[in-house]
Amino acid sequence: MTSPCNSAAPVQQKRALVVESGRDIDELLTSVLDGDGWSLRRADDNQHALALATTEPFDLIVTGRKMLGPDDVEILRRIRSARAHVRLIILTDRFTPGDVIAAVREGAFSYFSAPFDAAELAEMVRAAMAAPCWDDGIEVLSATPAWVRVAARCDLSTADRLVQFLRGVRDPDIPEGIISAFREVLLNAIEYGGHFDPSQHVEISFIRARRAVACRVKDPGQGFSLEELRHAAVNNPADDLLRHVAVREAEGLRPGGFGLLLAKKLVDELIYSEQGNEVLLVKYIDPATSQVA
Amino acid sequence: MGLQVSIRESDDVSILDLRGRATIDAGESELLERRLQKLVANGARKLLLNLTDLTRVDSSGISVIVGTCVSLRRQGGDLRVLCPSGPVLEVFRVLHLLEAIPSFEDEAQALASFRSRDDAASSS
Image (cartoon, rainbow over all chains, first blue to last red):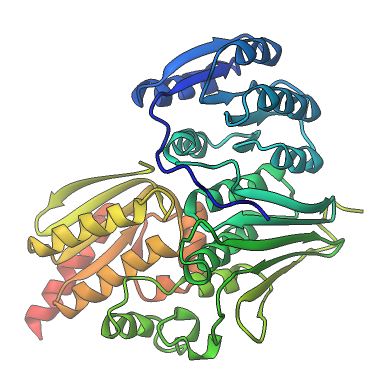
């Protein structure tokens, strides 16, 4: 299990090294980094970045998109052996799911595979410096191409990073709907099970079968009874879609209560354990459209 | 910040143009909640949320929109949405919110719907 986050303050001195990735990405990163007051250095390619990173301290490194996935991971490994806590965001055009897993194992901050979502990339770059600490946040406990098990620290930034790694896999059988469902149950686990306590962790398993994708999230909390959640939209009657809003107001709760219902609607099955601190999401894959033989 | 909110007025309707994402990530949903609460506290009762450039919404963003809608209706007002699309429309659709919150594809029609509601109220 990963150790608790000890560092209290976000990074103040911000030095970024960006590898050339083409005009659109370069302009986007320049506008984000300039706007946020970074000192920006450019590298022609990833080898150049490696040479610079071993001689100069950088807080953030963004790789170039034109390398093969395994080469990105090797660069990541070598840079982090020289600069243990540097935040490294991988951009890549060519990769496999195994490359994404290897990047998580080696401590990448984030992973973006083409086609890139400019807004998400910009937000991840901002998040890279906002997090007070990060590199003990996600630990790969075990991984095969079909079954990945990780532990994730109970904070929002770690949840965002984990979701982006899942998006980075670009598996056509894992559409945005199931990623959104996973994000909702993960945030519930972190908030209600882990109370945003960075010394606590949730355990997550992703299972990729031939005819289904499954995701299990186990939180460190005491659990709950789904049927007793009157302040959640998932228990609203069909003829009163907004009933839980009044219940939440009466109980003095902040606006909310749609997470479980949204997750349930976006997958084929949502199953809680008896104790209520483990949830399983299942999305069946249509054999006619699946990319897996 | 991943959400930009700009506000304009058309008669007694406040139109909020949302750009970016309404999610919990970097406090975007909290920002939206603060802007909506301030408008309502200042007397706004008819809100039109232009979702044309909203790229993503999660349960936190939906909760803010629905909570504001319920609150406004209790005070004799209403909230409507304009042009949800892509992942945002998908969230509204799977939650059946389009049955509870009127949605329009055309801004003029959305504004007219507030007026027709007033006409119906005054003639009853």
